Length: 329
Ligand SMILES: Nc1nc2c([nH]c(=O)n2[C@H]2C[C@H](O)[C@@H](COP(=O)(O)OP(=O)(O)OP(=O)(O)O)O2)c(=O)[nH]1
Image (cartoon, rainbow, N blue to C red; front, top):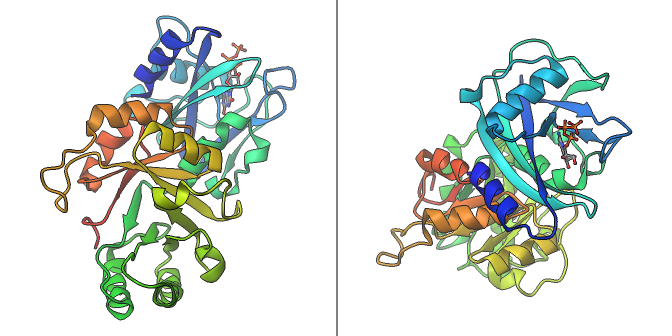
């Protein structure tokens, strides 16, 4: 849990005390409540998700309810808070652990109780540069879906397209699909991806291409690029622009750090559990997943032997959600 991770971080930080901050993503009608930090505050003048420091003896949920009431007048219910992400960030002059929780059932009308402007924003309208640097992964976490659907076996491009068309029927609008087809050669993959972009667009779904770092330039309309670790390990910089998603498959903390340096928007981490395709090979397990996700500065999808029914187990361990094949393909 982010809560536990915060305690671990505070305990291990020898040089500088880490400030544990309860941060609220308050959602109403699909929009998120944003405030402006006072000019005189740390990171002043920038936008923020309302919240504040966790006082000693308080749980993060208690702190959040208190801070939100003090700052906005809204009433949150502790029991209804959902974990979003936990981010440790060193500003140089201050080290913070942002412990981020989401509320969909805030009661009342928000007002800036401390004189700060507040307003509701679409998640897609949030821009990194308007917020403190630590907020980048929070913004990504809000814009990314909880499920990442990855294509399964694609023996050839025609069959792959037929299969995708059927699989897309169950996908909700705004979801993302990763087109993974390692058995196709480059021309076949490009053809399939170009057709798949069209199918996905009709279904209101975003298509992420998978494989070589140049693919986004070759497939018009792709919403992003996901690379296996083999490709990521050869990269020295982010291969796509800020307007596209960039995801990296990782297995270890070193690989996670590399993905962060590349500017990944999300990572996949696994295998968490044993998979049907690799029976007898145990996954890294929940405890390892939790530890690695707690350290990550980027949303982490859990992959390997998981379905949507395990989403609460993943998010409770600091993960963004579930990535996989079997639940939709
Ligand atoms: N509330 C909030 N704080 C953030 C965000 N991003 C971010 O880096 N921070 C940092 C800025 C501050 O260093 C710290 C929050 O501390 P704060 O000063 O707002 O906490 P507080 O309300 O308890 O303040 P105070 O008692 O000192 O007035 O976390 C964010 O989105 N929301």
